[in-house]
Length: 191
Image 1 (cartoon, one colour):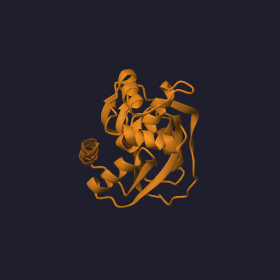
Image 2: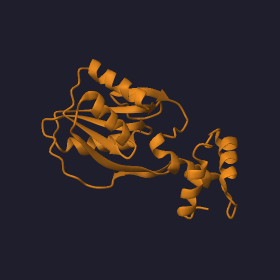
Image 3: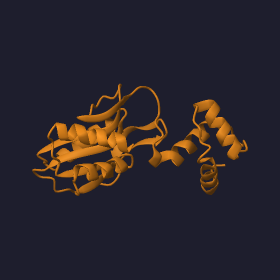
Image 4: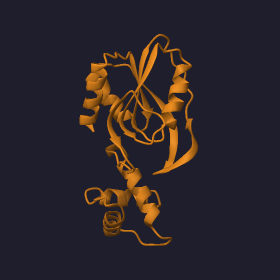
């Protein structure tokens, strides 16, 4: 993912855009925001928590801002960062909210943009088709959601079941995290 952030930084520098502040959309945009903070030398970083996904691939009808926050962005160049422009609805809501604080200019950067997204960011490192990306910062949650999609009611889940089921049904190799996923799933009473 760091290489994708480097690609974004390259595009932003080539465009000669100099953000005064970075706004990472929580949660998916937090790691890319920290990378870009370092790569662009912008130390002012804030977050905006927008919820759109209930679980993997399942969205609420409309995205919503979870915590209302007041920012002083008047006259600032703002760079909004997220991991992916999927439907584009979260980024549209973020832009709408941030405009209320009268920044000079707002631009958006995402690691990925889905070709069907109705919001096209100013900067994007990769275009994607119809597949789901399991980001390193969301591994456990996404794998647990995949398990829930395949687990029958009352079915016994163990580490081998997790490895086999995810490989066969989703072509996802989870052997390096299966034990951790299993332990966390048990702690959360998922199986």
